Amino acid sequence: MAAGFGDSRPRAGSPPVSASTAQRSAGLAGVAAAPAVPGPRAVGLPAAGARSVAVAVEVPFPMLVACWSVKGGAGTTVVSASLALLLAQRAPGGAVLADLAGDLPAALGLPEPDSAGLCAWLAAGESAPADSLGLLEVAVAPGLALLPRGEGPLAPERAGLLAALLDSSPRPAVVDCGRPDGADPAGSAAVAAVVAGARRSLLVIRPCYLGLRRAMQAPLRPSGVVVVNEPGRALTTDDIRQVIPAPVLAEVPLDPAVARAVDAGMLAGRMPRSLARALSRAA
Image (cartoon, rainbow, N blue to C red):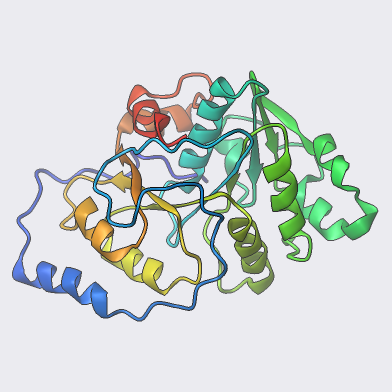
């Protein structure tokens, strides 16, 4: 089930940063980074270490945005769906939302699609022509179409083609890549190919020590970061800026209204204002 942003119980107040916490934060600098896969194409993002929040990134439509995380429950599905909904309102031809993780129908309050989905398209090879992607689309909201994941494994051989087709589409596209799973090398390779072909690669992360360690060791490299802020955490967005060499494009508050919208299947119809404000300039 997709994780909402209000599904954690906030702790009262924000604890002072202890010496041990400071040491753990500083110790992240000693974590060896994994070799990076080819990164997304540059689109004029701010330099690493930029301190502005929710930076406006001017890019022409169409474009491909890949959202991913390194730890479960970060909020990648909700961020992906919300970015796509915002882009659908702005782009003249609407937008496309592609699901590689499998939770988007539930997060958007949709029944499980009958479509064969992207798994079948990727596995079909040349027997499924490129223009057949449109046959998989499911209407979500005015201007927004969903490409569901479908059943089965993700075959990596045509994942790069999928990214190229979505990027060259007349509509901007957002892909929920979920969390690459080391136990599924083929699926992780498919996700890596899509991220490498995206113009914008967004890491969705909470200020979590374990999450930051995994982000440093991950072979994927983001071009931007979306921080889901959780009350009571000892680490902050500044710690993330120091560790991850990509600008923070948005800070999303942990709002119970988001979890309620997801639980009620109303995210597409009534996006909470806190979520829309946080992501509006990162879309």
